[in-house]
Image (cartoon, rainbow, N blue to C red; front, side):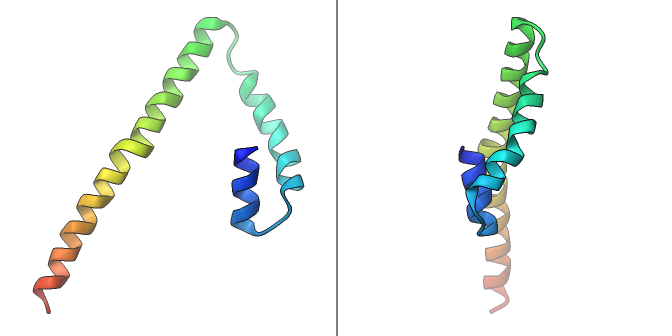
Length: 76
């Protein structure tokens, strides 16, 4: 629901086509793990991806913005 809501707000369209469009994707992702060990492996991969996307990437972007901000301030 959250993914379809985000896409509908991003493209300024109705939410229902996005809900129906994401159903096959969700189904295919749910068919990937064959046993409980695979489920935990997929969970670990999602956790590592979230750590990178929401942990390291914002920190890197903050550092880049600070460096670029100082660079432009010295030119004034």
